[in-house]
Image (tube, rainbow, N blue to C red):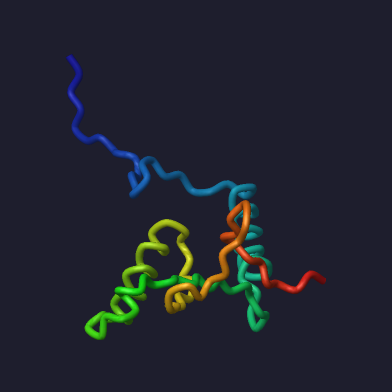
Length: 114
């Protein structure tokens, strides 16, 4: 039979057993952080923007009691939960968006090709 007076437990963090990072891991983390600052988040540069145009039904367009701000917020929140970015939402009156013949055109890329 063994008698143990004191047991030293390892450091358990939020993700389980945590060890101090090695020099290689630290270098990778620093590179990734530098990349995120310099490449992924360009400061003072124009970023792409997305506008979602939502065509209302004739009934919704005519409804004077429709809370359009609440509708925009609801659509925005639902989109954020799916695509993880915050697009601008533009509510349009019925039959504003041109109908295409044949295959539906749902995405229009307005960026300048350069």
